[in-house]
Length: 368
Ligand code: GMT
Image 1: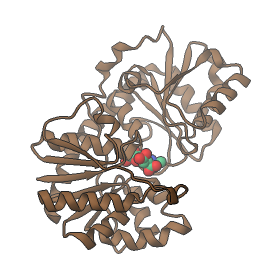
Image 2 (image 1 turned 90 degrees about the vertical axis):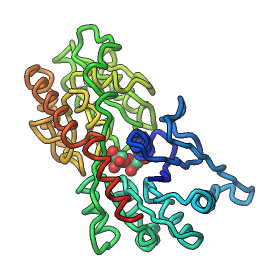
Image 3 (image 1 turned 180 degrees about the horizontal axis):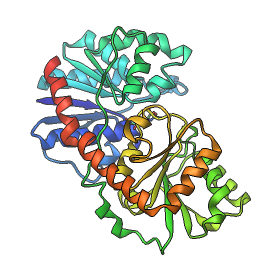
């Protein structure tokens, strides 16, 4: 099949997942055209065979200084050109906002099957926004088949957009070769028990909650370190909390790293304290790396990490419960080992390319 994949090129979860999916489909013999306004981060170092990256310019005009370029229109006209020239079998958009408008516009230009995957904030945050809800609700109808990355998000999308039926849930997958316990060797831990957190340090990722929890227990466990990986608006606040609580010697701010897989594999615990998460790719990546997860039981996270099986999940941001679970994980090495092994097993069974990609192939065949 020839699939045109449309995604944002940035490091966000939806763009990253679209790149993973493009690569897996290409490995299975499909032809992929990946269309974006820049080369996606994942493909900056080169492209696999059968994947063609096409970029379109985000043309602006002085009059649009404050509103930005007409992204949806530029994308629709690029897609129309590709559709007329190559007659691909299907267009697959990742993320609802902007792309539903493109899907609507494209329908006026050419006839081609279109599917769209809802990823998270396009439903639970922007989808609920009063200004966006009505247009999104109407525009979603331009897409032949909607999917979402968790049962939680599918149910929510049905409610938020008053859909007749829920989007088809196709969970995300992770690459078990890239995220593997074997990748841990590149990282020196100097005998410490390491809790790792990797995010864009936005409100929704709730990194300050993690630092607060660690601040209350860190001193009891002087051989424990908290590694904060990534960058974003709350990084400074996390630093201030750590400083105020005099735990800076145990908290390392590592900044944006390319070797996330090595860090997740080397860590003893991976922390995902998000306020909301439709799936939680980092949790699945940690599981694939045989590292137990300490996370908030929000959104689709419990569909990925099951409490006491692959990790420990605290409810309602109870500081007490979160502290208690973190202490349990720090102290109980055999529990960590058991949860870690279960995590990898679960990824191989439920969230691997071999299990998930055929579901997309089936979906494409059903609408093309
Ligand atoms: O960063 C993005 O591109 C999308 C972002 C969001 O805000 O919707 O991430 C979502 O998509 C990921 C890939 O499907 C999921 O793993 C994340 O859980 C989800 N993030 C949230 O729901 C906050």
